Length: 243
Image: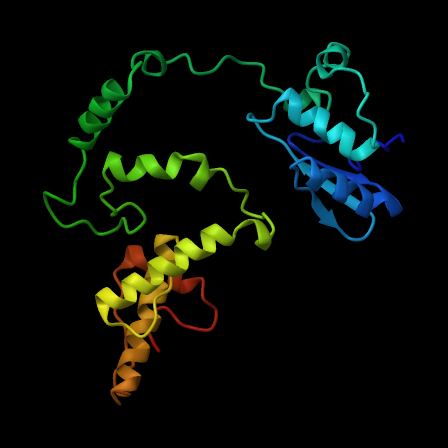
């Protein structure tokens, strides 16, 4: 069955289609083929593509939308598709890019790490002095710690994946929270927020509640260094320097 063109003529990696009453049938076929589609209202579906999308993924999408597994090969159709069809000519890059020698000077992980260390030595660092800001990057993670999070088992999930497809993540995070509670003696642990600025704000909230729990209601002023006031100013219900 034919599918109408995308709702907007301009697009890059995200498409929205009006499918009408066929929405549930398309979703059922997509799930059977291992695809998740974004549900928009009761008559539209969204598709998100990226550099990892393969010809097999496109063929599966065609089958999900059409219900026909005998469609032409992707390669055959791809030859007839005009390049950058969804991007206006005024938005296409006309100049060259990545021409600086640095983009072509380091070809191994070791060389790149050495170059990054060279740059690091030019800047102030945690192991040499105090720094006024950097809560987002103060986690000194070793390569052996960063490597596992690149595994598909960790990094291959979409942020908007349905809850019934993320039970393993929930189990892992729940276990981590339990272990942290046991190690710290806290009543509860939250793994949110992730951003450093939000973490500072959350930390101030915890400090405030701690003082309140001890009856220290006279502690009603918070002095914040200038670089750290931005996340507090973003909170309309809490002034920058006063509780």
